[in-house]
Length: 273
Image (cartoon, rainbow, N blue to C red; front, top):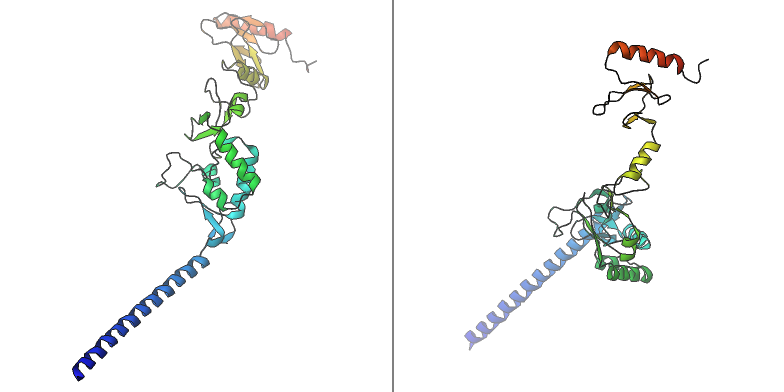
């Protein structure tokens, strides 16, 4: 009778040992998880916008590029972009400024957009979040492909039709080009013509230029002698940039010298007596 009792007690002790062992393992796992959570709570990063040191729990990371921001900075950035209501999707601020992302990103574009889930997570108010939804739903007809940085953007049909000059919103790029002829338009140019005439006239208006009185070739006037020679094909005209008069077309050095002396003996700077 003793043997079964001993055996019974042996099974109970073994079960109790296993139970204690499992409890210890669970307790260890719990402590490990709590330790990991504590480390996460203590981890900090520098916000890419305000550069403040932010606890990880108060920050967000844009999926696909890995750039980190404090919630307030990203929220303010999105609200400003939504007020403009021009480009969509809205790019990560760092991607937009630098034109770079994580090489392992799943996105084909060199820059990464902020997803709607992240916009909701950072606490956009209802007005701005509704603007996000409306902007996304109506910007499906006009796609802009920047010829320089290769980013693609959706633009409202209304804005696209009203604009002749397109602007890339990526900070490091900033390309301006004509949507009709695809020519690059410099920032100092305020009017553009696809044949280049407006740019040419604007260039002339900003410089001191003169034309050859014989063939009409344009020359920029430099400081120094008013004597100019036209090197247009078959021209060889000597002329004065002061009064625009033709002096001679001769190729004979002696004749040229005499013609110059005769002209400049009469044509003098207005400040000379």
